[in-house]
Structures are given as structure tokens and as C-alpha cells.
Image 1 (tube, rainbow, N blue to C red):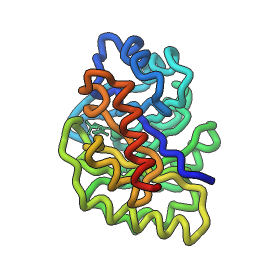
Image 2 (cartoon, protein in one colour; image 1 turned 135 degrees about the horizontal axis):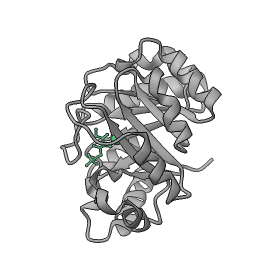
Image 3 (spheres, rainbow, N blue to C red; image 1 turned 30 degrees about the horizontal axis):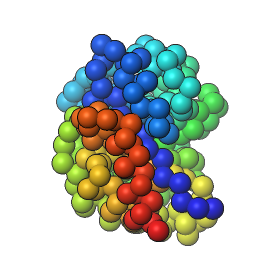
Length: 222
Ligand SMILES: O=C(CO)[C@H](O)[C@H](O)COP(=O)(O)O
Ligand SMILES: [Co+2]
């Protein structure tokens, strides 16, 4: 099948006082990326399941929850109940990542696992058969607006090779510093899903920026 990059704007860079209006500004988005930070796993606090549920009420697009939280087994169910289509937890935070992924499937969402910049791609290999998505962080998680770390692309290439070798239907998502200049390299390395916060909401026309990002990803794979 032809390559179809998915653009997932992060509402972390949106105006939290008007999330309904901010989501209306991005009709071309494929997914809505929702960054949950608990102030423990990462040194920042964003919001939790009630705000995710509010996002779910104002959009029909798939809600993609990125949980930067400790003890994901305890909390993931709340995000499925909030309406998430995908729930991604951090490998570094999970005692038993397969149990978290299995719970997400039982609850009815897709399961994603994420790795921070310092975690080798190979650490994910044993959970690849149990998840639908791997999220490679290309900044240290916790804050929007950071600079893309090009070293993350080697991890994307390693994951792409292993997923393809096993013939798995697992998406590779990249998150952090993705913009019109960096998305091409991410697509060429093998990414399927692109999170962009500041690049989209910092643009004069956020929806036009989504089109630019998609075009650049497609061009890099042509
Ligand atoms: O998970 C995240 C931060 O931990 C965000 O999704 C990410 O940083 C998006 O913001 P930007 O595109 O501005 O880097
Ligand atoms: Co994120």
C-alpha cells in the first residue's frame, strides 16, 4: 500500500483556555495528540483524564494519548474511558509493559509504547509483538518547543528494520521538534506518524502547516 503519513498535532502548544476552538483550527489533522505529564515521570505537569475526556467530546478524530506518567498499569484505563483511540505509555515507567499493552487491548484501545532519547531501540523489541505503535521521543519528554535530536533517527531505522523483518503491523511515531525542516529525515528513516506541537500551533495558519508537513513527508518517501 502507498505511504500515508499521519500528522498528529499536539495540543500541548495550544491555548488550554479554548481547546475546542484550537481543535477546530486543525481540520486536516489525522490524530489529536494529547500529552499527559504527571510531574514525576517528567519534570512538568500538564493535565489528566478529565481534560482528555473534554478533548474527546469536541472532536471525532482519533485521540492519541501520550502518557508521560509513572505506574501506567494503574492509570491507562482512565484514558480509554476518556475516549482515546491510542494510549501510549513509557517503557521506562512500566514494570510489565506486556501487561499494560494487554490491558489496553482488553479495555478497547490501541496500545503504544514509547522510549526516551536515552533508551535503546532494542529495549522495545520484546514488546513489539504486543503493541500497535512505538513512539520514539526525539526530545527529552516534558516540554514542547525543544530542538529535534537527530540521534533518534538511528533508533527509528533499527525499529523499522525489525518491524519489517517480523512482518508486523506496528506504526512508528516520532515526537519532539518535528517541523518542516526535520520531518523529511523522519519519514525517510521510516516513521509513519508525526507529532508536531509548536510547529503547528506556532504557525500563522496551523492547518496549512499540517499540509506542508504531510507534503514534506511524502516527498521524502517518493
Ligand atoms: O511529548 C511531548 C513533550 O514531551 C510533545 O508531544 C512534544 O514535545 C511536541 O511538542 P513540539 O513539537 O513543540 O516538540
Ligand atoms: Co507527546
